[in-house]
Length: 535
Image 1 (cartoon, one colour):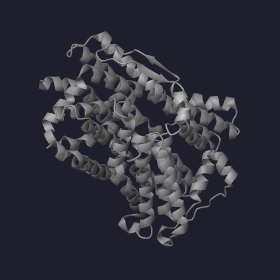
Image 2: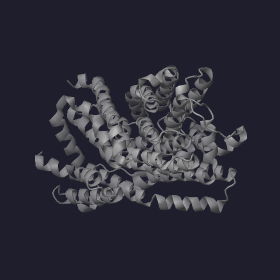
Image 3: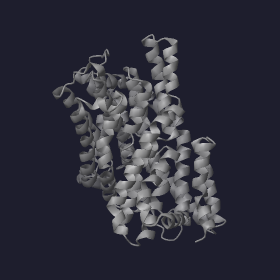
Image 4: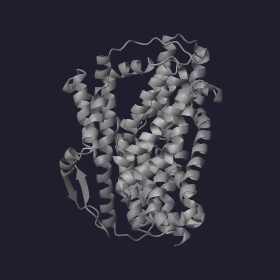
């Protein structure tokens, strides 16, 4: 294998780096160009049959549409509908009424509710919604964004009903439950320590942990332990959703059982009294999503079995080792989320026409996202089927040798930094990790599982530093800040100072140290578990 071969294989990835990070090309244009570049390289210098490569691209389109885009559309529609019916205002009021300690409220919103939104919808909602809510109740806008970006660094791979992990399993052929469990193991330490960083960001340093250390520790364990257990027994789809509910419950209970009385961290906020029935109605779509996903999961085989049997297998890819692509029509998270959204919207008194209007706006708002994700999946498929991914893996292993496991998380983080998506990163680099494992120790399935899990676990690390994540955060916080300034009659000079603090360059400068620390820790965790075995 020549250096020229590796350089050609790297071209689609290098193009994405330059296009997104340097040229600031819109993601949908950059990713579409990457798909075209990968196809040309596969057919011309690599000499692959164009018809076979087109069939591989078509399989990529099928995978992107069903189930990836289905679940993203359904999740964003559910959220948009909750906003449309004003139920989100009720949810916001309920959450902010739990405590007047800014550290605990930050944990509840950025860590607990942010984790829930990641598990439910992902796609930036876990940063945008909690950060906007925090600014709305009086938090500093820059600290709100930083806290939410750091909090979102660990649940990303299980976000959107586990779609990044389920997609990765389907691409690599790895067992879904084993993959989810391996990811949860590698994230365990970061899951526990991340809420400590959230508190320190909001409170201004280590001193902020005084009086809330135990609550913070419990909230970290409330993610780490249930996430590991659920992945092992049921799979990744509900692992963050259930864990985030445990997290929010534990924070709420600790706020009552272990009250704080530090005036430095108290703030006054007028909160609306919400009755139990009002809260139940407001949360109805989320409750239904949880219930329907649970009932149709492998935990309930009597329901999961018959529904999973409703499927169609279609031969698409025509190359060597081709397997039919299977469309599962009912027992797929996207369908359950759509059902929950429509039923929940009806309970919240939204008319069917209204809901269709919200759905239409959701489609319109995601049109460029559809192109982006389809293009990324197509690129990954072409690179895999042409042998480009395997060549890159060979080059990486040759360059790093037995140290490669320490760099596996960096690759996953790079993917989500570039694309702003854990799913896209897994699609781009998941097959590369299995290829690298094959190069290191041929036939070692455990190594392939561990390296792939390491890359996926690190996707949230790259996402917290991604320009797309930062842009989403600013887009959500800026209007909330305008409203806060208006309601509280903040003077013009102070308002300008607050707005200037949330410029992209400022956020990236502040968040970089967390990105670097997390990448190093993830690399050490991965290497210590398997590195010695390779040596």
